[in-house]
Figure 1 (cartoon, rainbow, N blue to C red):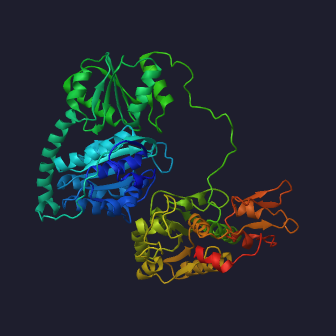
Figure 2: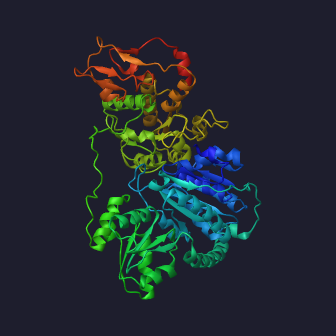
Figure 3: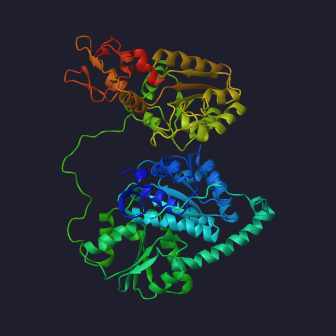
Length: 629
């Protein structure tokens, strides 16, 4: 069943994604307001809430970036409305400024900050452990071990935050966010979505007020730390003089590993649902009976360090192990925990527990831009220009689908750091190198973090070509809307923003027109070299996935393209240099188009130097083009 179909159900168990379970828990906890910026693995949380917002009467919407999302939800929480903000782990870096201060001021109603960490970096530039933010900010950290517990902990976290008038972190990881599990449903109360902001000096965070707030925060923290010992999601299981402390998905793996090794009931397990602050009384009591302790947690030794410090302060002499057995990098797996626990306990692993080997060796498939992606002809033509003109350049890339431009054959991202970093680093490159600086950024990312560095480039007159790839959607994370989405009610043209900054060279082009790409790029190059300062090219064409979906739903047949073998000269341009995944070489080097992959964009027709590519049959080009525009 779809998430929204479960809204009227108040009992029974249903399979939910971890992210859906978080959304359901928030609703059962009386959520009234939610905001987020999309980022894998967190995106499904707000998507689920948006899908039901009209059915349950909550307020939920996307924000332009994580900082704005945080500030919006925080404002709701200090106005007496239970709120949630969701983001991936690196998104909390963007929201860190208001995040730190929110712990000082506290809140009037429940405020849950969801950070979805990404161990092994399946869709991220790093795998930072955001539990450190809790340590840094005096912020409680809750960590579910399953989708079922994700629902229950989210509901509890809203109540906990409301009771202590203190914001809390809900830390999930990829395997919790994207795993389905049985979740028991409960009633959803009528939400409170309108509040009243009481004007108090504590919200004006000048130093004099901040000092008072710090004292009040520490008093709240004392009460929170004491309650950690009675937290319903912290518990002790089993018996024996060996103590295992585990949290999150690590707890689930420890349970399975203990069963696999025949250790169930023979070791004591402290299961932590709150990983900061740790339940000091429970840890002390259990550690005093232990001869050895192993802490199993995903990513950094956050709990391990807390446990070691606590036992040292209390004079409890027992050896605490953790990362020396489990390891630091990448996400945990069951086999990794089995091997660590077996080594720690000095027992055999009970058979082969190495990572499973696929019985069928599939051919390698590097990540590529989708068939029909508007970035492909743009990258193809710019790469050709740079090669032909032998221009020394630095291509500063950004976070989005277009990051794939780093891969061959385009090689158009020399640096990718974080959102907005293309124009940001472009400022520095423009000042200290003699190379042409090309900053490549997406439309959603431009609104997220690209405007301030562009203002800096105008202010300092930095010579730079900025290319905004405007496919009118936040494509990489699942097609969430952005200010650049023309089909939304409040569309903001990027060119209007750029012109408002005083940039003289601002041109909107169709990336499918390689001739227009070439002429505009050369004109921008001339402007940057002559006048200095940034020149902005906005390459606008809709995401191919959205277009083909709409064409099919409208009942129109997607046009297909074919290769005329008699004309094809096996030049390899279409599949090696243009690199459309729908085009393959035959044994003789000639090209063939897979009709299952072709989306009828027609970009390859322009690329072929001998006009060997054509539509399989006539079609209404104007009608099809209306979907792409």
